[in-house]
Image (tube, rainbow over all chains, first blue to last red):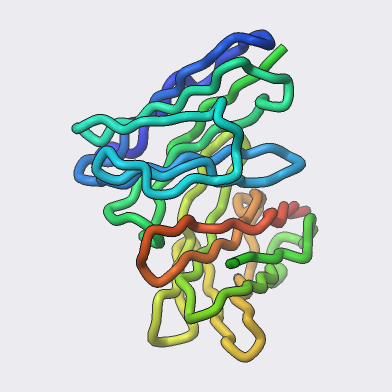
Length: 113
Length: 114
């Protein structure tokens, strides 16, 4: 069974631009969560989607948004990028929402200049 | 609100020595508890999990953890560390179902010296 796939793995953007990150979950998993990981803040929960519905949302500004498609693939978008958005963005899939075991992708490393 | 504390930011052990990584949680009921490991540049991999039942749980790579309700702890142990165990370890807590997120600790970075 293929694991969680995140694209792109690395990207560099400048302040003010926007970015879209993609996540393909494990086949059969309907829950996709997104986390931001930075050295100072650790792993911060962004949001969780289950069957195309956002179930949970973390404390991030509205510039951070996401969606999930009918095939469970998910995208997250960050608009008007700031330097502080530089981070590793991790996607995790699960076979149920909430506290199911999370299977993580390798992440998308975003650098904002 | 649920929270996780990993008091040790960085730990150094000698190869072959035993290891214990500490984790304390705060949650109103019996939680789901997890330990994940992250190698540099990689995502997180689940080492083990506790949902209910036996409070001593075995995981992959020779790791085990013990759930102690009275101490709100879920410490990770390994009797003999290998150089390949050098990584960052995250304790996490989740609710018993429901639409709530999993909360991670800040991580403990393990260095293994020969």
